[in-house]
Image 1 (cartoon, rainbow, N blue to C red):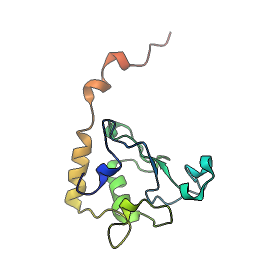
Image 2 (cartoon, helix red, strand yellow):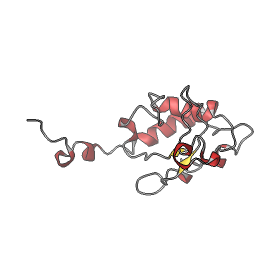
Image 3 (spheres, rainbow, N blue to C red):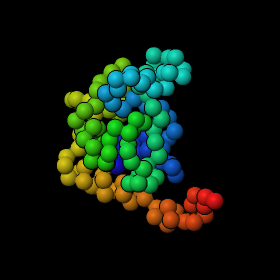
Length: 134
C-alpha cells in the first residue's frame, strides 16, 4: 500500500487526503468533468475527490460513478486502464506507462489489506443504525 504510492492519496485517519485528483478513468458518455464543473478550470478536468478507504469492502460500487463492482476491477483499472491526460495525477506517471505496476500477487495482497479496513463492530453498532420507520 505504501510502497506503491497508495498512501500518498489515501492517508490519515479517514484514509483520504480529501483532495481532488484525476486517476485516469475513461470519461463517460455524459463527459462528467468532475471538479471542473464547479471551478470552471481546465486544470480540474476529470478530478474527483479521493474517497476514504474506511469500510471499503462494503461500500461498492466503486469510483464516483459506480462503474466498478469489486476491488479487483479497481486494481485492474490502476494497472491496465489508466488514461494519460494533462490533469492526470503525477502518482500515475511513475512507470513507462500510466498507472501503477502491480503483479497479480500484489493485487491479491492489496485486496486482503483493504478488507482489513472494514470495521464490523462499527458497522453493526446500533447507535449508528437507521431509525425505525413507524
